[in-house]
Length: 235
Image 1 (cartoon, helix red, strand yellow):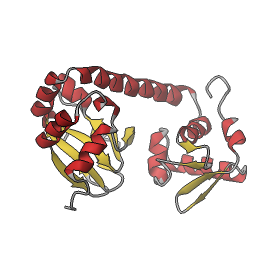
Image 2 (cartoon, rainbow, N blue to C red):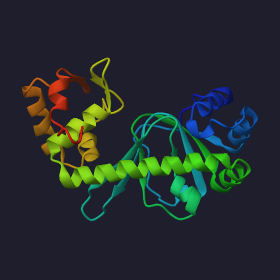
Image 3 (cartoon, rainbow, N blue to C red):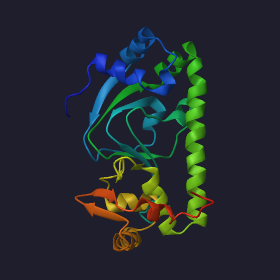
Image 4 (cartoon, one colour):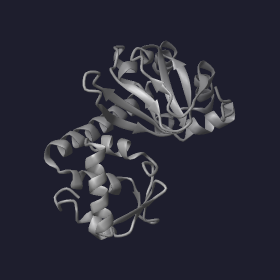
């Protein structure tokens, strides 16, 4: 296992940047860090035991981690959401104390704070202001899931792919970030389609001069044309 990159001081700075901890003093954050153990997970580390989050709460300090559901009969995988530094899991298990059927896999080398679930609950009980922030996090994730379900039901692949690119685009640099270096398999899972269908859509966008892909870097060449792929009542 790789050596943890963050010192306790670095972990404190990382927690200070997370919105749910904005009202928490440094001493109380250091107490939380004292309850935790840093873990480094190499790229493609999988957490396949869904009972893990019954006992541990995780805060992402470095890297990207995908949360996904998996159908063992069909072998199909659906990405529920991507997590970045500052995200945490699993809030549902933390709040309700029941097993949450989600799996996790690191997209990059990652570092997390691992906190025993009962210590996390006891710490929250002493800092109840954090509960509203956790509820807001759950609500935001639910709203995104609702939007994704609506897109899958109502929109075609072209529209879903255009929205994915725009939602992850740095307009100033005309490039896609956060999902920029994901494989086509992962991009396809994010919009609920197959790699073959996504590849065809990428070729269409390339032929229309909308984007260019080199070494997994997605560059947007014609933003107005990309935006036009989304119906005006959805953009």
